[in-house]
Length: 304
Length: 259
Image (cartoon, rainbow over all chains, first blue to last red; front, top):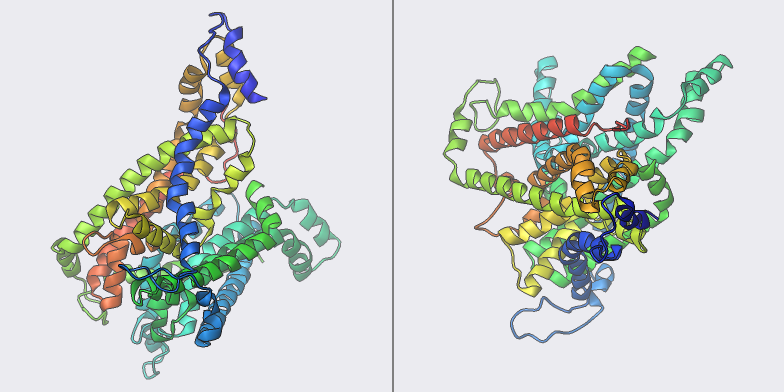
């Protein structure tokens, strides 16, 4: 409808009709869209297709070696059983990170909505979100300062108990989870906050005046109403976490072997691109399955 | 309950900021091995000033971020005009196509780019980084400018045209000035996205052409020096400034109509 108005409007104007000048609207629409979608095609869509094709090759095509198509890269989980363990590790790290983020983030969002207002709330929200938009690598690196032996955590402990040993837990899976929670908590707080802030205060007052205790309000009113925010926050945490590789590398050291680091290795160390491609696509399938499952909730979350 | 909530929020902020502040403080500590007690020193900033590799990588990052910002803002704004103001078939599909660069883990996108660029002969290096960064920034630009469009009434443009303005003139004299804050916000956003991008850059950089995050990553893995703390502090403060400026231009959650 708007298109018709756009082209008809000048004809109604006082300067008279300008016949023969106006192109059909689809021409300009296409011209406006072409650069963006052309760019995305070259930078994202064609690469993904190429990687899909690569995942069926038997070896990285080098020089004159013949190109052989095979399904063996997708059998990697059967042929190399240690990959199953690594896959489970990745899923567990993703699960714990998401769960801890959800609990901490939901409570923080409730606290924001119920205990603060006006300028204070705005300030707190900006302070919470600010780290999210800074370099993730640097934030992960900063945890090594805290968690290493004789790091900040140990210094704090030794102030209280000078003879205590080290409680630094750098290069463990706990360290990886702590670093990841730190990275994605602001996002979870934001999605829960957006869901909670629309709740009418009258609902909670009504519940309270009818004798509901705080835990009843929390679990029977706030939690169900925040569910869309919690779910979209959980999806948007879990997906990048199972694809992460620098957090496990830096915080996990030798125990930090995940799907992410295995894929990275195929491209930077082992030079087995077809295996890397098939593992990437397996990961992508998991990601797409998660998005498909929660697409309804996610769509409501983004358009609200 | 109110004070408990506030206490919890303060605890959350302590969790979020402690490692960052510790990291920054260690950049001013004399000891190379991050040993305490703390002795104030500018030694690592002096060292940083003479570290050509890190400074070059930093310069590369800024140049890439600037070019990315300009290109992504131009392309993204054009697409946003079509997606916000035109109706055509397949529009929801096109909107859906903006999601993969944001939603698919960068590890997958980055390795896919590496394979494709290698296979087609595009190769790695600055141009490859630019192709990747612009693609990642475009969706954010479309979203930010699209939000701006929603706060501007379409009938203002129509009013201008019914008074004799051409569509192009109406767009440039009515819509664009109203859209200006969103476009500027989108440009800053694109700049920040590019400046902080590590994963894509990591796969597309060459030994001779790296960006700051890639250089920081390899330094961390090699066994690090407090110079990394110094440059990290500079980088953090830089991106925080950009984001705070962005927050001023495009207030998150600001739904007031600009009429």
